[in-house]
Image 1: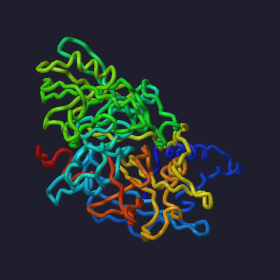
Image 2: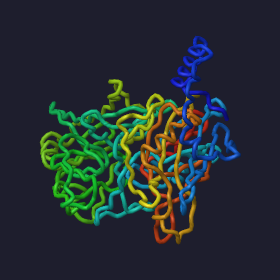
Image 3: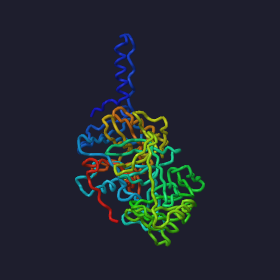
Image 4: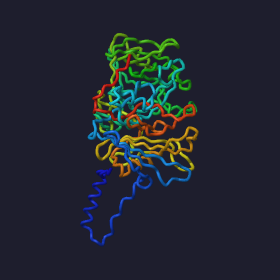
Length: 489
């Protein structure tokens, strides 16, 4: 497949040609652009996978390797809605609070086999949280909950607030009417009581008093490493957190983390029905007894407050009155509000890899792990982008399958952000925009029901694919044309 030049490069080529017409024959020839990183050290597979209409998967294998290393794989999936009725969408799977693999999330999109998603990748960055000792894990679920690091939206429902990002939010991809738009996103969350009192609330679907991965506002303070060995824990003793009815895990109880005292507060809990009416307002969080398992009622919501947040709820969330929940999503890059209707899905990130065919100067060169022997990073990478044809593109950079008895420390399977961005920026791919999604053990790419990326997490001595918070996929029959199963209350 031949990729047309990207706009900026096409203009440059045209300008060079025009100058050549006005330059004397004796003038030195113009210097050619150096080969891309992809052209220099990667070999494209002879065959391109086009077995699914509208989906093209191209594989590149690394060459010229350092001694003792194995070639990495770069896979590029291009989605063409003009070749088949497909469009982009997002999902959190069966529940916003429950972890699933990408395969499980995509299998749950529809019960109609012929309309199974045709391609997908994992989505937002997230943190896994252990369940409270008193919680009973729902049937079929893992004993953990999930906390996305940034905005997560499916069908217009917010499942997580934005990272603070100094008041401008952080990167994300807005998926609407089947196409993605990469920008910077900030949430504004507030409550209005029947007596006119107003306050903001802090987040959605996570333990009050304890945020993971990023600050949600300027009141969240990073916990020193002397207090907890976990990285990126933020505490705030005065919070209100909302829980949606698709959380489907018992809501938090106090003292989930014995090292973080801000979430030890018993606090106050409020239950809302589908109209916002307060149907219950009670002391404590998650029930009075250790055996209590409080879940969000179907169509309703639950609010939990600690510190000043508990005081506000106790004072203003009066039973049988209406409490109005306000949720606003702002594109701070363009200064516009994104209306949270059922057409909107969002996955979040910290880093844009490409903006207008250029690598942002602010992109750091970081990686979770590196091998001192090879200099190669061992974090797999995933990107969501758009190309010169206006098509959505999934990109993964991973290692290859290996036996369960092989040590992962010798398995090169990824790259630093800068190295990955340079690969993604290669002219051969024709990408205009690209967003870095969750990587490492989360990195998963599927077409149809086939997973093309190797598992890297080890459970019980076996390599497995990691459970993820949400995912992005190409669905069949165009935007909104399939029926999602209605969950049982």
